[in-house]
Image 1 (tube, rainbow, N blue to C red):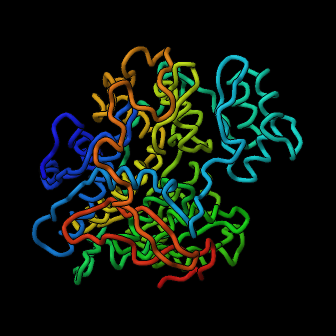
Image 2 (cartoon, rainbow, N blue to C red):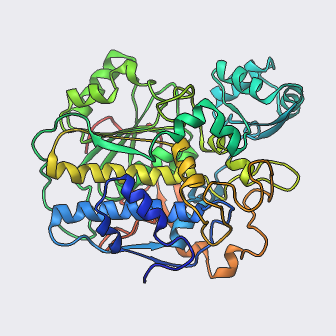
Image 3 (spheres, helix red, strand yellow):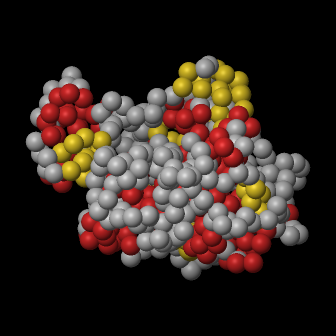
Length: 499
């Protein structure tokens, strides 16, 4: 089925594929199908989702061709599968139980001069937020609400950050553009991907055999990521055959529910990189790794010798892929962040806001999911390039840069509401706050009106955690696997060894 007219078609695909350095002619291998308009918003969320999944599938197909010979397999992008996968955490059921989304203190708050969004899903972030506000550990939403109502939004932002917590003042797109971090983000490309040094012998990968086609088969991936974007990337690499070993610090455990969504196909271990024994084990793993993916703020892992150049020096030919919230540059380069906070800071929440001025949100954590598929695509493209040039490669991405791409580069929208190409939408997004979170503009069809049933893209799997209902992978090319090889297990329960 060919590209649909008027719904974004391959616009996001072409833009993202160019950023990845892919051969332009390969875009002709991509076809789109399924009902459009399933992620209704003023911004072109459907175009972002469709494009990031398409380039991930195309990069996988390209690597498959490099290993099998012959033409690049045809890629198929189904909007129903994409929309379901972009809210996979909402569809997840564990023995019938839904996974909670946000903790009570992770929400919007009225400040004295605007709005603030906090993130306190993890216990240590909750504790730091309360400490920054001078509140006792047992304080709840009423106490936080009362405290924030008398403070300026940007003062809250700085006070909470200084205490190691997470809070961001809501800004309009124009305010973000004038902010030093907004300017730093705007000056960078969607992503960077290239060699770390002069190169070496080409990577030699054994030919692929059997069915389904798993282009990352035989490759080993160290996964040092958390929450959604990084785990989505490594979940995709696991789908494609990689041996993915997730590493968490024992003193910083991940949510089991989050891992139940993004841990398919992986193993998970706990490793203290601050201890001599933990470092020795990591070095043994690194000596046989092909890819290292990190999702911590820039510089956070450097003290463990995990800066890209140091990793590549110890493991020649390594692919290093780095993900952060705000990017490497600017005054916020070293700050923590999450999708919900990036939406608020960059002006997305203002564009998607309700008529009463309440900030809104995208219909999915699209910055996380979209950046995750871009990150996987960058790793796959690096592996393909290595078969020609050799040498270590580095990919760098950020949620803030994906947000900039959505607001400024993906013009016209996706069939569920449009923008003027500058992230302003219909009316005055610079100053105005319109529809409520996730609501389509007037006249747009609801997802159920377009023949879309999420159940078509869900499956139940029995595993160590019980019966899981989960979204199926949206990455599809001729011969691709239709689901992961194994269901997720307990976080940190596996031995720190390769298969």
